Image (cartoon, rainbow, N blue to C red; front, side):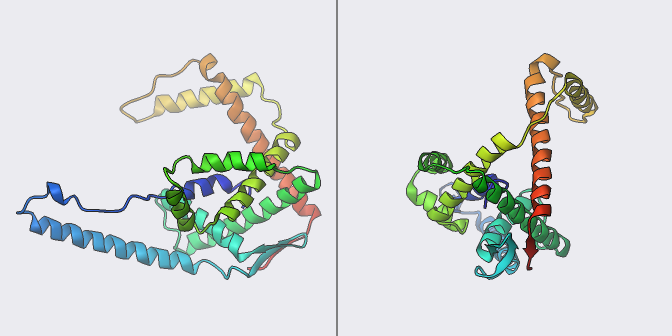
Length: 258
């Protein structure tokens, strides 16, 4: 996986490693009924989680299966399954069920589109000489490992995410390569003062219409102007990137096989 899905992989690695345990020291001897209810509830939750994992696993394909080709370059089931897991995890974080018929169809399309788009950009980046150095890869790897206290915790997280260290390094290499490509090849465009003012006015209006009891104080334009400009530039760059992907897709040969 490359530019578009890498941030999600970092999130997928952030699994909860703390074991679930009962706090028996604070429990009363007269709370047997409560304990029984808690144990039953825990068992139900574990059963539901197991059923969900089984449903999610059924959406995966054989790791050696070719799911698509991009200008003759094969995208394998192993890449698809990894990206799929990320999409499934993201949907669950938003409280949605990734195993429903409609959601499964949507996730499949998004996963395939993402992988194809990534491969197109990666090929063009390689063609233009962009690549990651060993030092850059190690620097990014160190950032990914920061949340983990020990290598044992980190390796457990990798396993939970169906990754190994070589896979992760390859993904980081793709990310660095693509970031360099985007920075140099994809323009941010020009953001005018009027666009900044219009965006600011919209945000102020939304704040004023908010039903929240703790309404935020409206900031001054000069205080948020740099952030608004950066956001608009990123939007422009994302649009230009997708235009580039469509251009590469039009000029290339893409064959989706699942």
